[in-house]
Image (tube, rainbow over all chains, first blue to last red; front, side, top):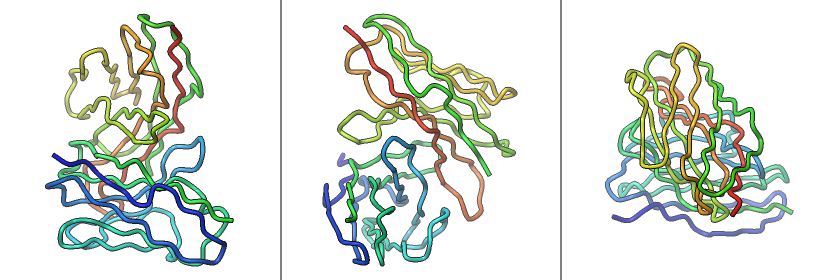
Length: 112
Length: 118
């Protein structure tokens, strides 16, 4: 049983640029969620995808967007990067609400 | 909206002793799940234990157990026989089992840093 894998592990971008983060969900999991975790804080929900459709979104602006593919892998895209976007971005997959979520090790994004 | 509060920013315990981490939450939902996650320096969030709100029996996973008080909206984690490998950031999290635009959204607390001393 494979877990959740995220790439890249670290990334440095310049303010104003665009970035794409990738996530492969755990085998059999059809739901993927993305979270932003600032240093020393709890993760904040960005959005969730279920069977290629966004079905839940947190308090993040439209420049945060995503995709889910037929194999349930997912991408998080962030346009017009700001310094405050510097954070750890976590991807989580699940099969059913309440069964628990399997998290990846995250992508550490630094915006300079 | 749901909120989760962890009032202990840091805790420490001696190896082999018992420690309890506190968590309170606020929600108007009646059907939900609660979790404790562990995040070591490797960054990966690891599920420690889960509790279904409609079950009165407290969940137990080996050395980890919870004290779930639904009326008080309290969900504490007890770690028995603490081990050095338990050193990590611990997060309490909530998810409502209902539809809507935030379906499946995990709401996390601010975390508690636990250090186990030899």
